[in-house]
Length: 176
Image (cartoon, rainbow, N blue to C red):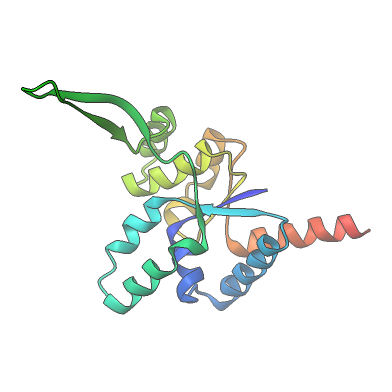
């Protein structure tokens, strides 16, 4: 199962400050499933952009130092063209034009649901990269869960505790 961590979860994993404590314990349980190979957890460079805005210098440094802890999704940008500049002596400079919107339809649809741009990108990246779970504690996602799941039925929005319970049930069914 491919699992996407929203920035709240990706950052909380590093700083170990997910609240309430039951959700932090669930996140630790999810991490055990990742280490066991049961799930593959990812985030996106959108988390990095959000972490860079952290005002606490020590916290920001800690987040930056741990960037390689959680893999980032592959499809987080697309080349939409090139801007070529011809120089006077036959030189050519080709500059790619890149967009961080990898699926315009999903992005537009979730923006219409009231998500902010950064949150819409998180959800779009999860959907575009074939994630099955979107792990978050952000009420902006949780309050729109039914609408987001209706837009992308293969992607479920879950709290860490919900995913941990699902993983336990799956493990118990496999053992029985």
